[in-house]
Length: 257
Image (cartoon, rainbow, N blue to C red; front, side, top):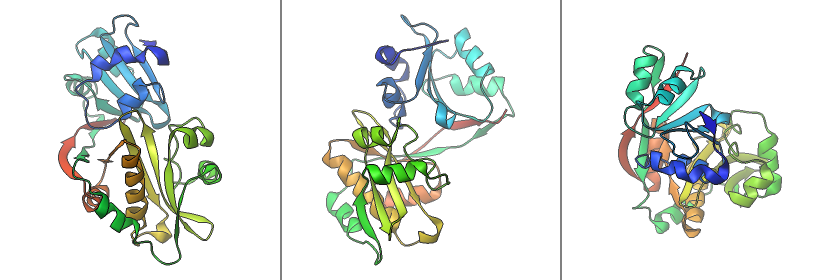
């Protein structure tokens, strides 16, 4: 497998046409994040789109190709796997039986989102908090913080400056503290992926609903589809509250090694 330059990644898109659950492949193929490898630069049969910061791989193409088996055999421990083509899940199970944990994810469509409904949520800011759009200062503060609250934000951007240039986010401030934040986890020309976190001491006050609704509204105003991809029941509940329509689940595998 060889690395594919950012300008040449588009030719890999044919191998991920059946992957319709989130915009991570689109962002990587557009060259704005991650890395791409393939068996051949000119006529690829197998490709992998990687998000190194998250130890996440999206595999696509011909799962019966020798390069596919070789990649799965050499998979690093603690890697998450999304499957962009048929046959890969079975290949992974065959090679690493007993070392994979299935982690189903919940997918939604944004087609029924209602701006009026979202505005109602945005208006419900609890007393003592104020809603602001993230600027460079807030992005730098979030980027410098080492905590579970901050660690998943801006990981797919080169710097806070890059985030402000290409992404966007909204915070609820309690005094000078960022109490809750919603940011673009990934951005492509079609839409965005969403990351939301609220500090433990500020939870159960509806803060995540407010920042999420504002982020979604801003995304729609920019002509970008705000995709919701949930990993747990709490996220599923918030999606429903905001007006997303459930579309079932899709598989993710976690290789423990």
